Image 1: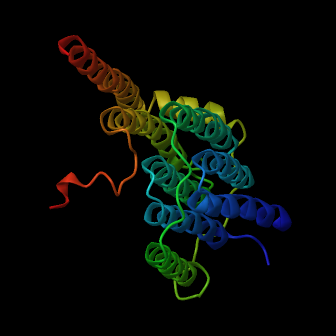
Image 2: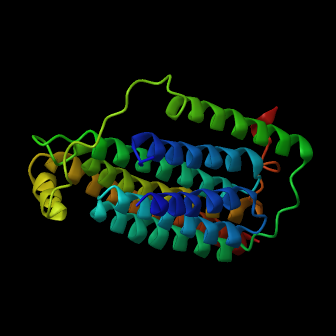
Length: 172
Length: 106
């Protein structure tokens, strides 16, 4: 299974890099789909199939489609190449973060990591449902309410400006 | 060499670093927002890996996974509101370049 991990890690990291450097936003969004699907594959390797499916449905499905829709809507042009100062600063920041991450995970100075001690439970989605409707009932309802508030907020945000624009048009 | 927790943590943190790199490098608000989503997704992956490796036979359901469910729901809210703000910005200013939106600079 090791080679599968490395393939999926490459499938996650290389498109994640292209999200950052792609000059066309549509290409960035497409790379983001591949990176998110690679992450879902890593979740499958971690035997959390339910979250992997959720990741593909919500992230690679809904969120990226929303991004693409907005890209089409506002018609962004291809970005000019970044200036060398900003590129250099960003590259230095990336290298520093990667060095820190490396020393936190592989250098052996970090504490002992947990070992895999138990097989993943069968019927994980059933346990998910039971937990959601018993122990995590309140957070579940708060999350649902949050979705409602976000929906109302988006409607208000996009409606207000349409009205001011039409008022301006009728005044002029 | 077998795949253990540090490998997953390294991939998650490297995706986080690449998202940060994108936030610093790009000037288009949409691409910055995409990189932010990538960073959030990387933190989700780290949480899943931690909860899988820290599950015990007594508590095989890792509560971290339930929290990942909530994080994904909140991320969906956040993307909807953030993109609505970007569209409102576009309607008002006809640009999404962060270098041109600098009224509060001075």
